[in-house]
Image 1: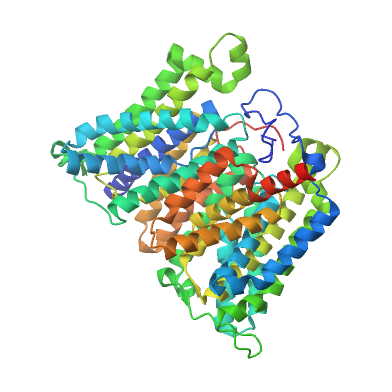
Image 2 (image 1 turned 180 degrees about the vertical axis):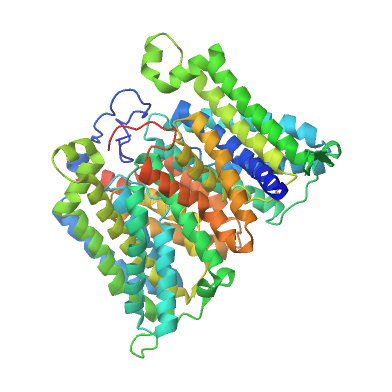
Length: 340
Length: 293
């Protein structure tokens, strides 16, 4: 089971017979867009990020920013390391609770609480990641899913800390006495942390370390033969991903001033994977777009009074998996490259 | 001692559900390399189907026991032909994602029609009494569940090891290319095996209807426990999956019997065992080592 999820044309069923072919997608060599186009996209993205709360409900804008971090974290593993984590709610949720507890208990400024939360998530990722990277492919997905469920059960039972089904309420939004009670201002206060998290992942992917991750994704046996400790690299990527997801989860908790058990549920893990696939696996920009699209869709559905949101997101997702595997950004990039 | 025997029996009944679900999952995985996330949702549909057959059509438990696995197997065959087969040549993770999407759709479809509250479903009159098992009396229905589960697991084992069909399926599972080269039409067996696995999940669902709460989310958390079970047993090993299902059911019941304070442990136990197995034998207790990665 060495082929990656990226591979759509050369992948063969891993049916036990013979080694899997080296999965090099046909257009990997040309994944880089022209320089001017990349700059234009970057500038456009920053502009959109700066005016987002003017065009949307600020609450929705905050959610999009948090989910963008979460999805990019999942994409770091899925798209660049070839590991599909189906249990990232464990890190998103643990950070949400830890951030909330730090903010409630110690009255810390929210960026500090969020950083503490993300560190707590990273700490949790050490044992989970250590065990999970022993397996690959579908097993990795099942193992992470199972451990996340364990965290969910523990949070559910540990009522004295998490509040159980009542959740953690009245999370303060403290920042040197500034009035952030309006989500509009909170969005801008949170934006530097979001940008920092996104930059962290972007920097990682484009570093020598990131190139090794891609090598491990594409051909783990060769990466090992070249002397790279594959498990350790995977674990490092896992921790980094958990930290980034934790940043998102912490900001989400402060944004909603409330933490419920939902943040740890497996549907949350699944939603993160949905966002990544819809946006485009292994593209970084894609998950950000995917987050905007999915959060916007959900907001619109609930505004329209539609209760069974899973019916729509499920159908959209199934369709995407069947016929739209490049995702939003992947399709856009494919199209731009053909034009340019 | 009597208490202990009673808990053991309860554990076996709980394990029977895990084993039936793990068996279906393992059979499908063996043939298609697909891990069916929707297995829990199918289990839920089995139980809900029994409830709907009773309240809206007027067919009792025995009809449901016959019809629901068949109907769901047909549904599974349709899903395999229309959806799963399209992704067969890609990374198996895509089919995992596909069935995850299906799970969301199925759960919310049932939710939108019947709400989230649990619906009552009575055991059939014939099995409403108790059975004297020497040391203690046991609800007849639970004995029935255990007998059916053991019989089904035994029948599948017999089918796989003692019949020509089973031989072909095993060959196709272990060495698909070689089997094809020897003139066995492997592709022919993919769809029936998928349908069969789905039918098993439906059967587990019908059996669960009288003793578990029938609601749209009854399979949601269970499927994750079953995932842990098959990681413990080794998904490639059908025997391992079934054995792990019964074993986990047993241990859960014993821990539960220790009292209220141990509720959390009985919930997370399966995941702790999974962690231990990953440390000690990453391929699962009965699994074979995969190609290194």
